[in-house]
Image 1 (cartoon, rainbow, N blue to C red):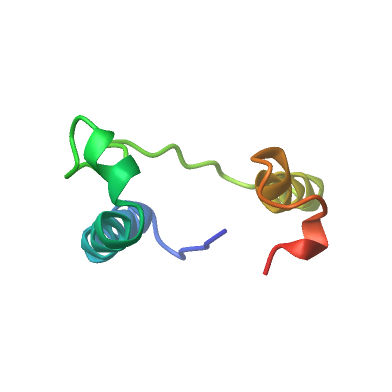
Image 2 (spheres, rainbow, N blue to C red):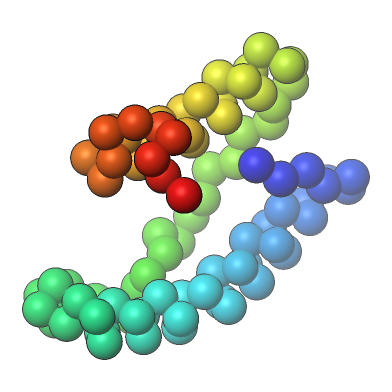
Length: 86
C-alpha cells in the first residue's frame, strides 16, 4: 500500500518498480526454478502490462485491503496462518 501526495505519481513509481525488479526476478527464477521458468512461453514478461490501482477512501476500506493482502499467502497455500508469512 502506497500513498502519493500528487496525482499520476503512482504510474511513475510502478514503471520504475517493474523495471528494477523484473530483471532480478527473472534471474532468480532462471537459476532457482529452471524447470518452471523454461516452460513459460514469454520468459521476459515478469509483470503484467497493466496494474489496477485502488484509491482507499476510508479507514474501513484500508483495513479491508490490508486483510486481503495479508491473506494472499494463505489463499495461495504457502502458509497455513497469516502470522507464518515473514
